[in-house]
Length: 197
Image 1 (cartoon, helix red, strand yellow):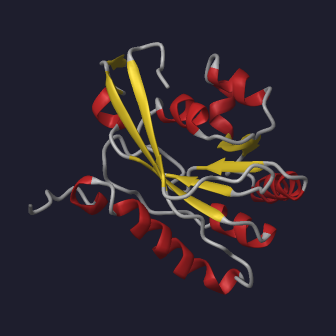
Image 2 (cartoon, one colour; image 1 turned 90 degrees about the vertical axis):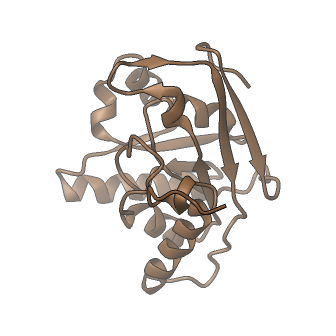
């Protein structure tokens, strides 16, 4: 797959994503390029769970609004809960959901703190959770200058985690497992440190 700015997307799947089985894709978030890139890389129908601010972004907000996606208004807890309820219902209807558990961009390879929403959503819906690691988007798109350079963006789809029997008490353990699944693909394990060869 290739984006219009000369960036090729190379995906790798630990195991195929089954059509007809809804999942939650938990994706790390480096730069704005992630959204169209991962949107084209996910091989099954899905909707975004996106923060409300994205609704105002030209073109991108319009595209999300007219897809089977929902916006989370984090300044209104009751609205956030209702958004998650809608997303859960869509998964029960067979639609997969994609969400950035960090909640904002990192602008580099480091993983930010995870928020609980993505994990709670998957557990409440009792659907598998797939860790998705964007490896190097920050190298191909500069957020400050809004300039992209040609290259290959690597996206790693991890093994789906079966959440049958998981409860809310298991969220910390699940967050740790997803973070570890992402870190193995990132320079320095997603901590900003250089790996020792």
